Image (cartoon, rainbow, N blue to C red; front, side, top):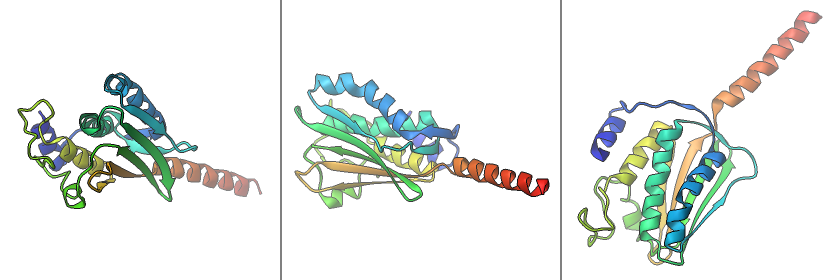
Length: 193
């Protein structure tokens, strides 16, 4: 199933229903969904959203898959008593989502390969072990983020946790609608003269 999803995404054939989505609200819903799992492992799952509404053109189902793949890994690799922080901010025409965990992290060299198919920073974890998945979750996340015209990458240093950053363009539809209304208003005023 994961391999099929990745193949469809790579071929540009993964179906998507893009719509303006409040990113902070979507993250809040996903955080609520994960709280029980994180609490069971005694890991704090915190959300620090930007104070302004951040809207992106997303397929909420597909983009939720990106976040669940990342949070599944954070839950798997963050030790009991640790913390995972999800934060958002707007930087120019980009929305930045950051997911930081207090796990052991990986080397910068390993971080560069985390989104490669079947890559495992810890070779002792196999698909047969309890902690292993298909090895495709982050590769799927990358394909879906790119389908949304975004970027995703990881930053880490050994023993200092892992930070995954997603950048998405701010929804242009909102700006276009506002520009269209302004121009329509200007045209109406010009016609009245």
